[in-house]
Image (cartoon, rainbow, N blue to C red; front, side, top):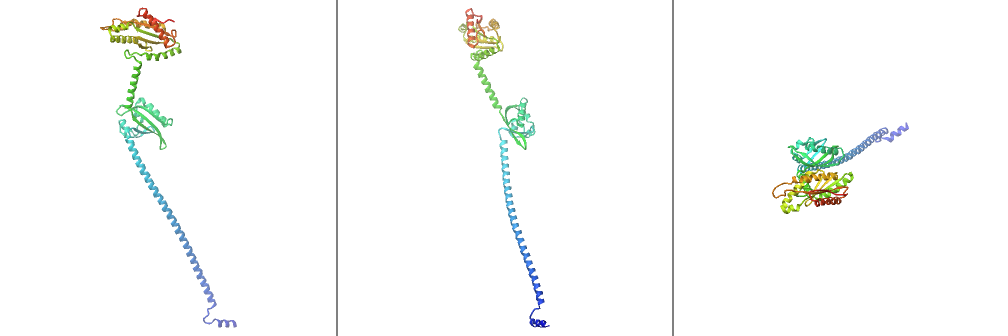
Length: 382
């Protein structure tokens, strides 16, 4: 009771009840807790928003950089594409205006041909695509071209160069020089060929070759009689002697001289003398074998080289030539009524084993024929 009285006295009307205070403290603590929780949540939310913002900024920067890189790549691709397109235009212009024909052959078929190729072979370019490359070559040369293509596409040969006969659409033949190389297209071998029309060049080369052959013939031929000259005889006799030595067979040399030829020139003139020489040369040429070598050795002297002919056979041949000479000579005004000749013969190896020995022995036999009355055949002696 006393404590209650004291409490009543000390509290008074202005003092807060203890329980009420305690309740207030609890309420305030709850408010503080709620405020602290809210503050914490607010701070957490603010941190998350910053991270999201920061991430967004980084992503936007990466997107911007990636976009810039893609745009740069696109511009570079456009530049490359434009350069390739311009290069292709220049290439096609160059190829189409080329002075040579250009083709690409894949799987034994023409897959590309420029305009010059079509013009060269007298056809349209569209006709060439898909055609057989053999169609453009002469049948006699197709095997050469086909083998070259096969060897290149199989890898046996890196390149080719041929001059063959081409066939135009109108059937005319041209000479074509081909240069070919192999390259990879789409993982497959393709043959790229350059073709040039060399008809004029080949024709000129043939003319030059014919001229050279003519000059060569003139160098070894006697212009008056058409027989071989001494130069040719000197070249041939060495080879024939070597062949005779290897085979062990004889080789006869016949030397002939027109009788009284100086008198013929003095009496009938040099023009008549030329006719006599020409006819005597023709008689010799007609009387011997194809394998025999007939030469005008000089002046009115002639030699005949007879491979694989022994002395007796050579003598018989000389007698036959001598006997027919009179009837072979032309008759007429300004020409001698009769022409005779003397003959001397030597044989390898009995009368010599070299050119000089055989000539000397034949000449000695000829001198003997002249000294014995002319119009005779004499043989060398051992």
